[in-house]
Length: 79
Image 1 (cartoon, one colour):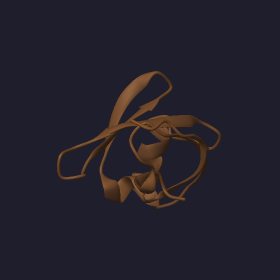
Image 2 (cartoon, helix red, strand yellow):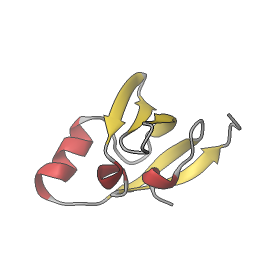
Image 3 (cartoon, one colour):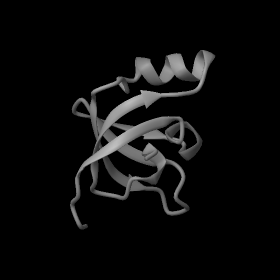
């Protein structure tokens, strides 16, 4: 499952970060690395970007960037 497919309120664990070059490096620098838990806090009104909580801080990612991150769902919260 991709990070861009996770619904608001759901928590997932990072399995793999795709992409290449500067985009991949930047994602790693933001703390999105294998094994890290992320929670999708909310989506913008037009569904792009999405706001996630990673390592205690809020981070906005474009859906295109989030689609490069493979995750496994670990918790469902029905908001």
